[in-house]
Amino acid sequence: MWFIIFWCVVLIGLFGIGGFFMFRKFLKVFPKADGKSTLDWEEHYVNESLHLWNEEAKALLNELVSPVPELFRDVAKQKIAAKIGEIALKDRAKTIGFDHIIHGYIVATPKRDHNFLRKKLDQMKVDMTPYEHLFQ
Image (cartoon, rainbow, N blue to C red):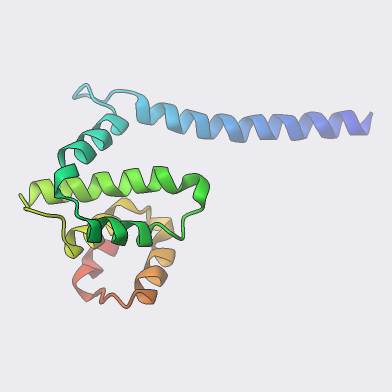
């Protein structure tokens, strides 16, 4: 009897956790007031800035997302690349440079992960002084 009750509690908890993450994903697909969803905008910025990326910029982005678990790495890379592309397009840049990548990486990373971000940038010996205002 206790085993069945325990198993029911575990299943309800797991379904609740899974439902929470599925609902968050659903909210990203849901259109905003402008008619496009968050994922649509990410795809738009990646496609519009694709010609601005060079091999060095791609390698730097891959290095920055290396601490992300492999299961989530593609999603993180898409989100960060979209933010970098948005920043580069607003600056009307000819190519995506180091400053665009670091700026987009900081802005696209959730605040709760900024400690890991700082650690990675310290390992890469990046001077964060010009970017301190982005951490607040």
